[in-house]
Length: 203
Image (cartoon, rainbow, N blue to C red; front, side):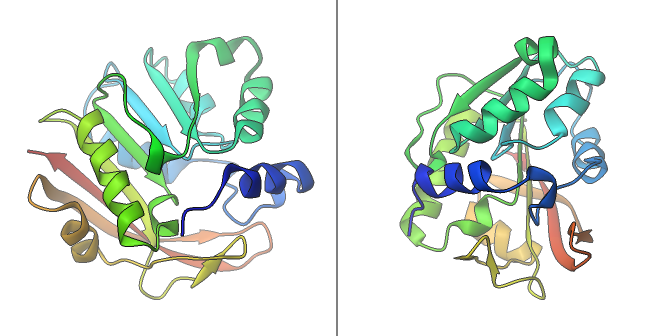
């Protein structure tokens, strides 16, 4: 079931972002995956980037075309304020990904921990339609989702767990799997969560 913006705005209004289970002080796993996709001159959209530290790390790399999309306006505001003047170097979009119609193309689509919340087939289909409209042939897609041995819920919501082949099956023949690996994420509470990381080529 699609989750409304109110749920996620409430999460970011009532909890310290550094205590949220998905918080990363250092987005090295994302940066490593992004580095597999080509030079820093490529445009990038971060799906569900919210209040993460990734946008700031990309600005530090002197990337010039960065977009962050998140369902929570509150999360985006927190990130923009934290970046200060550098926040003006990022385009911020407050939208539900399952209801979003892209207005342009990006070379790299990065999603850490959004797709696995889409437990309904209709929402996954809407997501993939947006993805297909936003990434041209030759572009790259990075998906990081809970692995088959990962959590079954997050932030009080059910999730769908994936192996690389499962993600390939969801995306379909328009995407080729280039790289995949497993990587644990340590939550601020000290728990370990198994993630599947996959990089696809849009064909």
